[in-house]
Image (cartoon, rainbow, N blue to C red):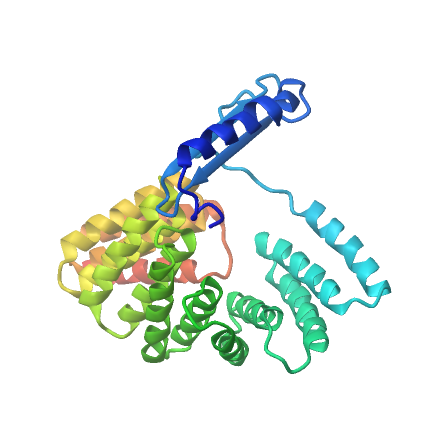
Length: 365
């Protein structure tokens, strides 16, 4: 967003290139201090207007570009944040200590450790609430939302609901217009309501969140793609299958722009769209999408993975609904073979595979 006001893009690009290649990091790469440096800037539509990479081939014999996957080691952030936290607590600075707890929570969230993140975010909420008192403040609103998000991700939806409702009330008082922070809160609250079987209440919140993203020019972001998927699920849960199909198609379109290749979210959306098409009696179209989803899961994870098993279960179910019993039986045999090789324990996907296998055997006779 810092670059949205800039008009002279050519001048900016040449200046960035000079900083990166002449005065900056390339020399550290050449000397072996870093294995690579990569910089990329996009406009609000996702178009690249500047990209620069330098790689020390002795340290890393791979190309680095916009499709590279990089794992960020979060422990260093946690150690630094804890050190700062101790200092701020000793100095009696609750707001700054709260920020440190929030950073620690963010690091835990990045590794999907939502129990630890929840503990950190609750500590942050307690401290910023003491610091700001009864006044509405963005620190309190964001902390409430973070606590609610962790509860949601842990499947504790009933606990998440009042926290997210309180967070939304804070955000509404603080934001008169479109806001990404408000949109994020709307998304989490809407998804929580949908998970609790209250899709009719969820849909207006998700629609409002979509409107915020579009007003702010953020309709090509990973967060927006996830929001679209949540909205499509709410429509599906309301039984509005035609609208849900349109919503899933838009979700996949945005996901393909954002992820630029195979991605678990795309496979999941294809599977959901396949089910919706089946409910509209467009079964062969639905099965083709279920097959595409399964093929993508195989490329992403291989066959010996629960995600692939879940795709097999979904496809078997679709084949059974289309009365393609021999195909369903073959797919269920494949699932049984993988289950024996993987030996997974108590899991919903295992139950689905066994259920569909039994159904296929029963109907074939």
